Image (cartoon, rainbow, N blue to C red; front, side):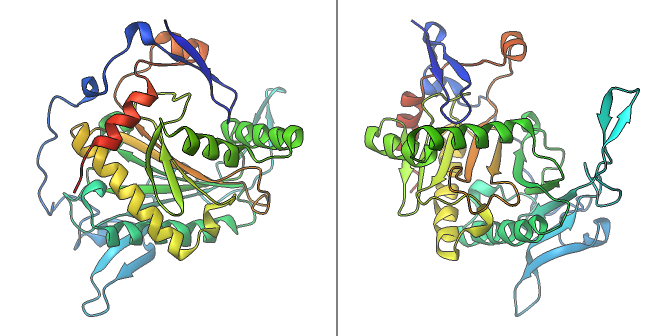
Length: 334
């Protein structure tokens, strides 16, 4: 029969729909994505087209020829911008609003138009993560910024509009409800048990081993007990560290290794699926609190949400995470 599982980090319920369960192999993408050229004259992210983008805020370049490996630019069509103020306004004597202040940047991950992140060498992924950390730490110090989200959309089902591999950072002057909930749950857990929620969760996942996909000296990747969707993968540091901005250079390289392998397993095992990933970190001012632990979530976009999920807020997962984790563990990537 089906099973209701509770996500310990949000206290949300998830239905593991065993009655309609699928096998992991049923989620393999049936149609291959079209082949892309190494360069596109119309792509603003390709080398030589830099004038088509806003000015860069950061770039990593080869010393011998000054060719860039990674560029960070302001988003040309930002969701939020630095102009305005954070004063709240009352509309129609009831509704609250404020100026859309924030910072929105794009990380152009490679000069090659056709190089998916899963197919990059480790050194390329290291560069990208270095850029994340550098821009994260710059943004979080801006006085009005309360939170910085790092995310990637890959493929149409994940919301991408440009094929050239890229990811984004958005700094906001507010803390969204989802993140507030995660922090409150973690703080409440510590208050009632005297222990750290994420430390206990990681410890139990490692002890069980059933949902572990991969483990390194500094990180563990697993499919959560209450996975909200098929093949949802978390990468969590083994140390209590609230802010992604505090990651050491050695751990950054370890993260590049495990992220690259996980994405390559998904790429080969599910035939290059669309996906999102996000790095969740502590709000500004909470970096020294160890109740919360920064982490990365990778969400393959394999099925659309149903009306029940939209209406109830309860996700329905048609595959058991223990089985998807086993599928991923056994996927050989060389």
